[in-house]
Length: 166
Image 1 (cartoon, rainbow, N blue to C red):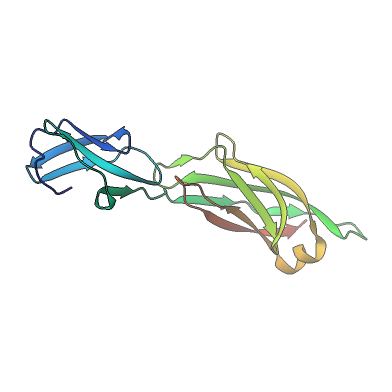
Image 2 (image 1 turned 60 degrees about the vertical axis):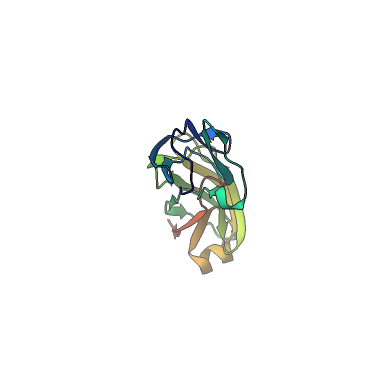
């Protein structure tokens, strides 16, 4: 950050959260590490003279972490006269930045733009669901799509995987 009067700074805050760390480089410059957060926040510096005013020039915008979604191939079987197919679908979501699975996130599974089912990721980042899909969609499309729409802290992503007949 650049400005003036930073000598003797006692705090740097991102919104209401203290910076993870900061260094006063000189009277006109501070280097600060943002704490975890989401959205856009005002950054303030507290010195013996007081706390800096807020305005558009002091705002910090957090960017969501990139995510990775891995969808597993799904097998299905057919019997004469079937018009719908039961699919067992699975995908795993992880945070690319932290390399950790992401629990409690909603994953939607579709075949040819039709939602088959929706599931929530478990502690390992895995989401599994079972649902019916039209046989014609399964045979013509040949794959399904898993979609995570994202959150303020995690970027959305999609993955596809093949649908194969037993």
